[in-house]
Image (cartoon, rainbow over all chains, first blue to last red; front, side):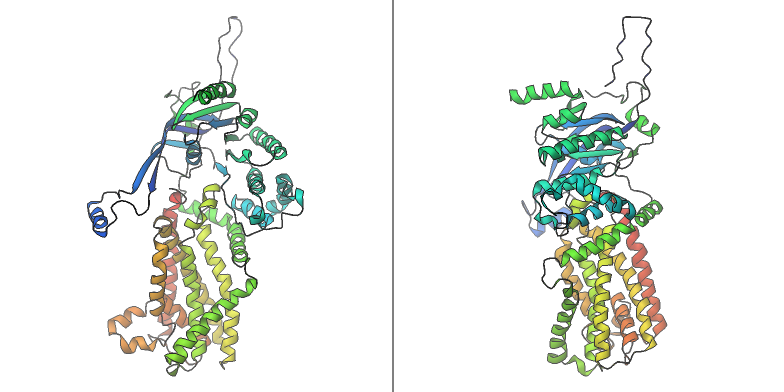
Length: 271
Length: 298
């Protein structure tokens, strides 16, 4: 948030703020999930046929309104924390920004193609870590030569080889922390205009967390915008200077991290 | 909380602000020419992914890649037992073993591509939701994987053909364009079922029956002349436009000496093969592209 506080001293001119460049504009976005409950309720063929004729939707589809009218603008060079209790719509909002979920109402505008980095981004578990790095990098649009150059760097950063040569073992033999680290390392190897991180820093040990926080800061400095969803308030505090607090799909607070976290902690402790 | 102005400094609405800085709507579908360009840039990913899938699919089997050859061989042996020895289809066909294996291997190429194609999107949601790439990479990688499998079985097929006493002729070269046309046809079809399978998850259950019916209509297991003998005229006319029948017949006529085409005209058969490749290839690509922004959602 920019503070345009007028100083009492009239001789001081207003500070000339260079125009900030927006990277993500979310305009009154609503996201609605339609969940198929499977064969429940009235599933007789006659009833199904009647629905097809009358074009009514099946009774076993439930509608979940996960994000309700969120509006904000993110700028280049910002790291924004997204916090909120479970089920408040944080991950859904990230998916909408990444363009993976359609918005029901409103709009999401982004610069370039945001990359969503989640802990459940599955690669091919039957293949060795190295092959997965190659595949992941190619899938992000790198050239084969670039991949070859970056491969050792990525393996080194993920630290999976600290306990012997794990890079050549299939990923199904990795611990959950190790595979999460590898996924983060792959995604962080590329310059993203907008990087969306979903709980990724929570996995991994302390040393890796330190390294990844450092990497997030670097990504930010090289002109990207970083969104971080985390329940670990400490990692939000360390990496983000702006925080958005979501509750029941609505923005409860949006501002400097220290203020928002203080209010959020008061809220969760008071519960 | 809702402030109408996104940017207090400039006094613009969010949409104006986005337009001014050239932001685009998230998850927008690119134009078909841009999409094709993207796909071309991802060609290394397609081949690496196809290769990886091939390695991964045999990684838990002790015999490993050998199954690439063993599976079609075992299949051929079972069908030979039933249709050759029990039902005695071989009395109508001079070289039944080569006739059967050619049909089976060529049909298998399309069959497995389609089967896996229905899951190209729905089976890769993790990858789709994590990374952005043109989704057509996935069905194309499946076709590429199956093409590689086919090359493996072709070596076996040629060995069988020679072992059963067929001469090696220049006609064998016709196999190359025939298989290439079939590959284009497969790629298109795989893209169609990939989009269908992404929405209608029941398709996976229906597909085996469709493919089984298609196999019986393609003259894989018995002489294609049975169609002309036992079906009414109009039905034979329809059957000779069956793309799989056409691709199988082209492979047979290039490898086996004593083969008859159902419609007696080789140029017409080539024309049908080319037509199907063009229709399925272009149509399938267009159809898949139209759904690009829906994949991985819901």
